[in-house]
Amino acid sequence: MAHTIADAVGSELLIKKSRFIGCVQPVADRASAQAIVAGLREQHPAADHVCWALLAGGQSAAVDDGEPSGTAGRPMLDVLRHQDLEGVLATVVRYYGGVKLGAGGLVRAYTDCVAQALKTAQKIPIIKMSILQCAIPYSLEGLLRREIDAAGGVLTDVAHGDVVELIFTLAASAADELVARLNEDGQGKISWFSENG
Picture 1: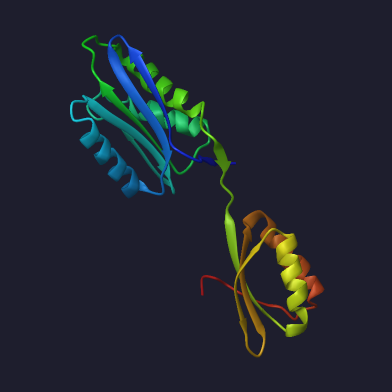
Picture 2 (picture 1 turned 30 degrees about the vertical axis):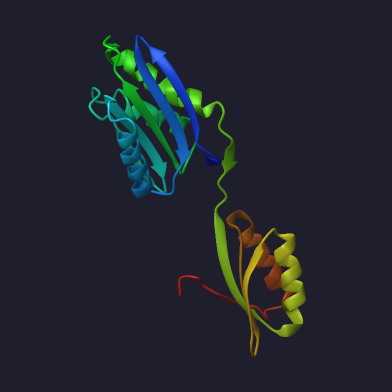
């Protein structure tokens, strides 16, 4: 199961006079990530590199920002994937200290910087949600409300007309079972609508 993190977490490493300032934080998408990276460039105008890795909404990125190819962004991305994270941005700002670390040293530095930050992260499971919409006779409204509540669903809209129309959300993993149970209890009197039209 994929996780995200509750809040931004950081770390700082000094390796052979180079300073690595790491941060991992929740983000919604690539545009948000790019805005954060631009902000870091403004905050750290003297930094030699602002490397970053993103996993968010099916979008991924691994940016070395002038470091040798594959020594910064990709290792950072690998840490995020290894920890099964989603909806997160990892950034590392590097101030070069005058001593070359070599490709292996850079990979270790960027990997360690992200891994150290994640040690303090509060991970939150990502639960995929389903939106369900149905129409029922008034006589079934109480039953449906109780079943939605028992399944951990949230009623988001109710319209009373010739029938009662309800829209609710619940964990996708519970949706099929709830629909089957309601169809049985409702004896064919529940009409389901697709959210897609």
